[in-house]
Image (cartoon, rainbow over all chains, first blue to last red; front, side, top):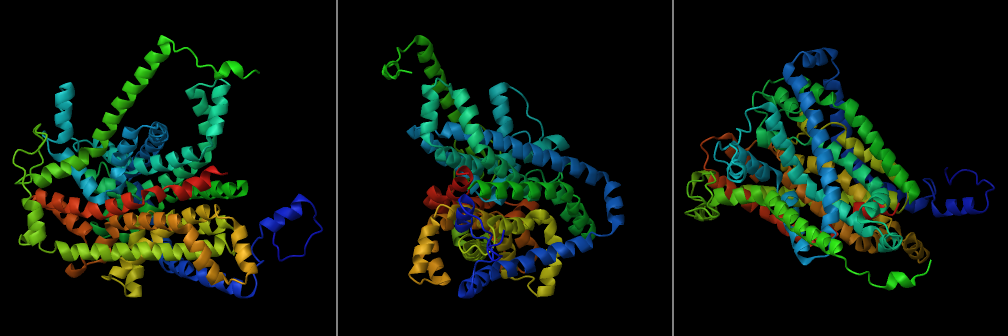
Length: 305
Length: 296
């Protein structure tokens, strides 16, 4: 509904709503000019560094023969399966744990506040050194830190972590969860803090247990935030090459690659940039619905507000 | 329902006491697990950095048997071949990081203001457009990006990296800013308008001061983003004088005989600036996205 159109003879709450939420087109004169000027920097950035490269990429990957070549390459098939596992497991594990841990960090104890400071550390560490530390810790066979812990605590001889594709991918997923879980815990912690305490007090008076307060108050109120966070995390994890590149390095023999790392191996090491772009474009059927769901979730959030 | 019985303290039955003890024990166990989980790779960095030969075996010494700060001293004096260029590299990382931070805040807040406060368009229209940035994973987008940068004549120029990183950090920044801005009553804008304030004055005197916490949060996100990136720096900066710390670390990784203690010492040094900034600003960090999300 545009405010610039003919004003309908609406009265009551309908007119009030129009007044409070003027749509595009109500701006005039210098306001309109300045608003456009303010958007120009981002519009320029978006055109030069998003629209053009993406358009160029679509053109590079437009040859159908590339996709036939991809499907006949077992490395690609493995990487596609790995990508689904990597994104699916890393995102869901970190989200569920973050939601539960944010409840733990709500406890009003001084030592728990101090613990939160330590817990956030992985997120603030730069990705390259953090993942390199993971790599050296796991690659030093049989004397790495985790293997020694296994030996001392359970008497098990730890494996060589990068010898099997699934194990190596598991290491990458663990490293990714390690790095990103604190961010989402902080966001859910903020979300829980924004829930009015009265709701919990009222529920307690009615005799609701901790579990039922979680299910009937916390979960419904955090659903929107949880969905939006999960979708954003999925998009980011899709594009996150760093855990795979630095922790397992795709070993052994491309068995733990994901699409985002295999794509640039095609482009750089096999000198076939169009194939690399094509590999990336095969993620579109999953990424595009996620993006659409995300914009949907964000626009309903606006309507609710 | 009468309120009187509720005000009486319930008698503490043994079952409750046992439950409390279990909860406390559970919390402590969980706390210990969280500390080990969070600190293990960090601890590993220190073990290697303090080892005279840079071994990374863990021999159940809680502290390395012969700890030495030799690696850090070598970084400082710069008289070891492997780490001679560390300070110029650090300078390059800081240069890129600071510009990414400033430009993300500037570009994000300008468009967030025009859309969210001036209502040039609806919020979700801008957000959806901006989120389109993520439609191709960034490590794949680099391939066409390189050709585009070649056309722009920006190859081997730190500004190519800055442009790329601002491009990827801004959509999230806009998202956070749009939803945080809803906490500021629009009556403030209306009042200022009646007093004859222009759009620029609204931005400078109302939007920026009131949005300061969100702007700080967004700036830190952008800095962390630049600090996390390796690939765009590696691909677009080819000459030695533009090399960054992330690139130097990766070179150690490629070299099997590299002195790991130097690598880990650099890693620790490189981790310090974002940690310092983050902990200085941490109370602002989660405000934006969260408050927007929960008020719905």
